[in-house]
Length: 230
Length: 230
DNA sequence: TTGACTCATCTGGTATGCCAGATATTATTC
DNA sequence: GAATAATATCTGGCATACCAGATGAGTCAA
Image (cartoon, rainbow over all chains, first blue to last red; front, top):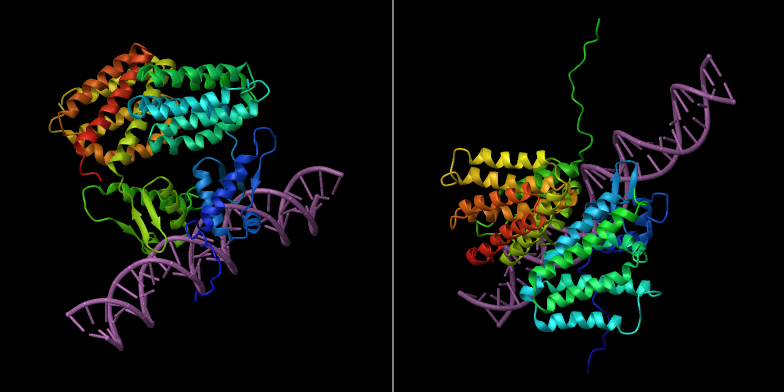
């Protein structure tokens, strides 16, 4: 006779409180659009430790990570503040993004399989089939990000993915505010299609160049129109 | 009559124990060539805190940073280990470096002053005037790194500098082992000269391409000859 | 001798308490 | 009443104690 056993699920012994606090805080910080509200946001270690139900220690170590990633800035005995990137910093991050995505495009033409590239086109067609970007900017913004993430992932270079992950987060808020300007959504679709075509033809130089220029255009747009940034 | 005063220097209230521990540990970790010795290096928080004369807390926070930067890996209740990058990871880092330095070259042609570019050529000529690379590989290796750092800095994009800083450290050990192979030093000098010439002529496309290819060549070299990497 | 078991020990994870600088509040002085 | 000084409070930096998992030496049975 089988011994009755409780249906206990193994607790996640892999993720420490520190990791859980890190994820929770990063989620919380990146979900508020800090550029749309004027006052700076201050965090309190003790308050957060109470809210999350853990002591200050894992909170502090999570903050150490978030500070290195540029999301918060700690001023000793003053407080911990959510960082608002300047226009200059945002543009520099977009430029780096352009360089890395350009490299990703190069690597795809050299190493990706035809099936992978075909999957990228399907991802593109699926969204295109039916709606035009006008009036669906939220959806389009999601599809847009998915497209870029797919390219990064297809490159097979994990280092690119790691280094662009936070760049995406920092730039995301800005993208959402620019996607509706100057017919950018429509232009963006055209650019993406050209990039896909270059990848399909394994045209390394062209794919590299188009991917770079597409993102550098965003940098130029931010330079011109995002004067709400400091 | 002046009151006698002790010549006390203001203590560095800016750098916390955490920061000092971080610097000391990073220095210590990166100064040992982990690829030349077979056994893995394990660190002990308590031992380090005793050596550095501080408690475990700042040590732990420094370790948190070093782990995020990829220099150490913490295994709970096992220990903290100095990370040995695999060949695949090294190559991916060099590829990212190539993309970023290529961007730096582009930005220089568009934004740097003639004086800055002239300074770069002087840096190059100074080292060239007199010695050939053979027999001075250590010096050459230093000059080589200085050249690349100068390009990064001249780009004016601080984000590139931040993101390449650790890449340089990770790749440095490998560079020192490859610089003497295949006449790489001599070839490298030729490449650097061509890059400088392209920058002087403000040839954006060419400078970008040469800078990228120069570093991608290193990646290819590592792929072929660095089989001592895991 | 060998294998499994026990337990002392080691190690990173976490909670807690104290410290000093920074700020806000109150008291004091003119 | 305004400017200044004294004080209470808040906040991040640091030290320390305890916990539990992992390890390895030692023990005991087959």
